Image (tube, rainbow, N blue to C red; front, top):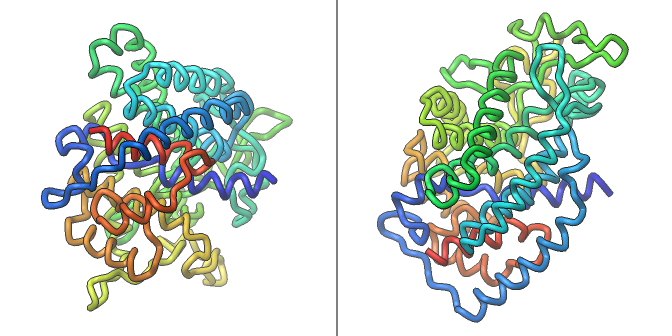
Length: 388
């Protein structure tokens, strides 16, 4: 059951994580690009979607995943609600969604434990989400889970700090959230979670170490965490989710290191998208080696290479590419046009492209169910686009 929930939740995180609001503010939410304006949604449908979504998210929030999840599940099960609350505020202006996000964020954050390097974490066995290098054997944190959850928290914090009425009431809390996010970045940077590639790019990796349950110290792999041949690269969807968090951190702090780190990943991501003569892209590999660490001693890649049968992973990739484009990072208007063409040709209908293409928008409105798990964040995201 948990596996099914996690897969479904991927769809939610995909639809929830859209363009940065700080970038959107300079280009109105109803605009996909300088020469495309979204169609106005029927008012009756708009009102119905809002009502159905609100009832669903309030009822679903009774699961209180924020009170119990750790490791990678923080991302797949807690993030959809955090993103839903954030976009709920953008769509309605109602501060009850701010209150709900703060409640869930605090419930998750207070459960942190202090780990051997002095940083806070939310470890569990199997947090890596993969059996490669026996990684799920370790009792460890998940960079992915933490990055996914922190992104909507940081976005809300940024919104609070630049909105006088919100800042007066919630400003101090917002500052602590951004400080935590910066602390988490330092934690993973110190643990060797980013690896430079030969092409001048960078990718996030999972290291083969964790916390020893008997001694409370690191297992042996910690000392070798920065060795050139150690680690396993994230697949594209996970690397894109981490980079999306970094872009949100740049928006909130204006510190260039976050944008620069994300940009190096997007440079690598773009190198994996191959244009065709028909104006589309070849659908890229879910995972592929990024360096020597991704090969076994025999020279065989540690993971299979090819297109993943789960289309949700590609939704995540396109979401991140759209965010990079909105930030002026690596991807261009031509890339967006090619993605739209690919989406239509492959019948994938990537949600992030809704603001850039009429057919994608109509398809979304016809197929979307506002009171669904996937609609937790996608519904208010779309209503926010429409409302502005």
